[in-house]
Length: 114
Image 1 (cartoon, rainbow, N blue to C red):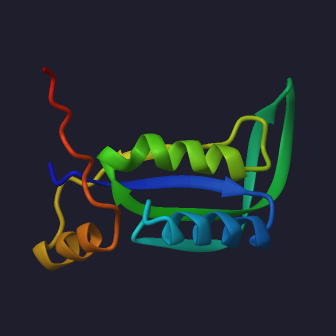
Image 2: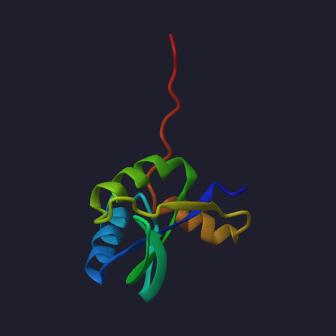
């Protein structure tokens, strides 16, 4: 395991995708966010089959940052139930992992107990 994750979320507009991407990278919760779209999504919602155009955000981050990343995406996301899926990166080049670590927040300090 590398500690790196790839997080997926889809949104309803390119503008919302950019807002989420800029917030995540700006707060160093992601080293990079790639925006792909529009894509077509077919899904079941409230008992009906729906078809929508969406933009896919591919978020490069670390597993230890996921709780903060998830909270920010949830705050900014326009959907009632946003897709926020994190997949572990099982292998990656050392230079890429070093870059990802440099471009994201410092690791939280370990808590000490008296």
